[in-house]
Length: 359
Image 1 (cartoon, rainbow, N blue to C red):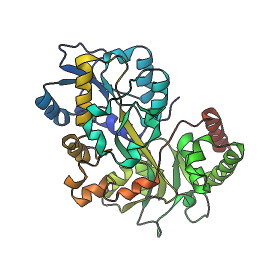
Image 2: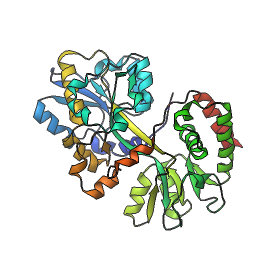
Image 3: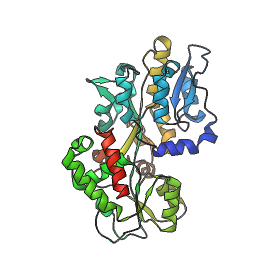
Image 4: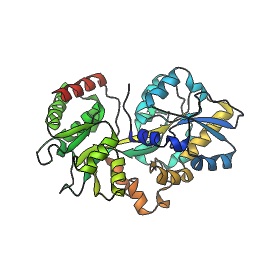
């Protein structure tokens, strides 16, 4: 079941020419000191990984992910046998676990995991029956991005659902899971109930979404198109990934972010080890996982992504402006995170979303 393209998917695709072509899915193993990492092509740049190889003698071959669904399909078809460490989305882990494609992690072999922020350490999406199958790796947020020069107040989720002040200048992503989740946050539905809403709650969301549609300029699907709409002023406020904020700020346009107190949609990719990895390969895989959660890699990711790790090992090594750029200057922001999940009634969510757009 597809959750959809994330903002780091976009950045990974944009960086493909830098990272080089992906290896075939079944790279040859030259020695036991070689392992294969299935990852996004902007996470394993030579500058990021060469220090690990230099320190450990372990060579890391990479095979690149194109979509979460593609990776899962390859694993289901037997491709997991050719991989030692992989990077799924956190909300994807339930299906990997249910399909017996991953093995439990021995946290004693990953000492950097002890430095995880509590919001990541305690996230049940990485566990089953109390057993840890994956570790949060790096993360970000999707939130309200707006033209601060064209809006006279900081918006919250209500801007999309009531009032005519910005009618025709608002945009929402064309994606059922996030769209309905935001309606639920606006309505005050408890976060613990959002992804298992009953008929009454879904009906309330549908009513709110129909009201929202009347205020929107567009449902966006391309982040490049949304960036252009912001640049021209056709859109002044949108639920968005962060590239328009970064890109247009560099162009001198006064952009801003709002982190609504009702909740901030967040995303996280995780590290996992396929079932069947054992022996020297397993020991090498644990060393790579530990390195990816550590400060040397984290410093490179903080500037190169820019992304934050799930551990606090790099925070105090960054200047305040970079901490703020990757949302770790004030860790209290993590208290408002809402982690998307595959809704219990996913097909009904998609049907309702399409009915709203057709209304």
